[in-house]
Amino acid sequence: MSDDTVQISVCELLRFFDERPTDSKGHATAIVSVCGEDLGCGLLKHYFEARDASVKVDVRPEPCTTGKQKGPRLDRWVRVTGASELGAPDVLFQVEVKNWSAHAIGGRELRRDPTAEEIADYKKERWTREWGDKEWGDAEGIKTPSLMKVVERMAPPPGLAHLHVETMACMWTALHPTGAAECLFSVPLPEMQRRDFARVWFFSMSSYLRSLTDERIRIYMPDATKRMGWLDQLFRS
Figure (cartoon, rainbow, N blue to C red):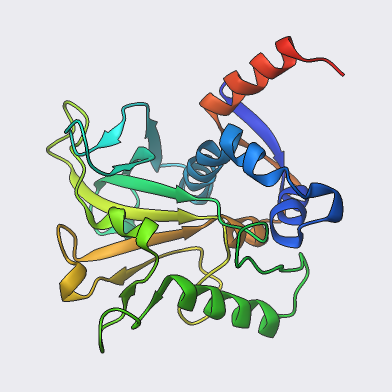
């Protein structure tokens, strides 16, 4: 078993980030700073590999930047090999992780056991906060300024420039244009936002966790394991 993996509680993650328990106030930002990016990419890796043992996911350590000193940067490179749903046998995703949850400004709580109608309505409402026609006339598109950087092409890591590149927003919140159960989906970008990509992929961590039947799963979180190791050495209760 890899030292870079962590066992997570599905129920407790949903309770903390979606239900916003009273004693969690003031702690979400700190927890996200320690493990937020790893949580998103670890769940994305688990999603692909748990569904098909032949699929391989490589969460890359290289920085996801344009290759310039200044400019936008995303959180991770994630290579997915063998996933038929992606339309290419070997895809390199440039991934931006957004851990926006019930704790965020404008956040909205979601019970762990909502009705089918409640969760569908929630997903559609959350979707319209990120995607709509506010800035783009009749064409829908990304509304949140801090998410716009996903449409910028980053410079692939050395040796991987030959791969087909797609862009992805890996979100905590449960969201979907029609309220459907799927946690991974793509939408076409409007012409005005098609700088380097024709579409953008979305992955919802909350939606994926809600689809699981296991109480606990083990996911790849290399940076988080090191940080938690340091915290354990530095501070003991």
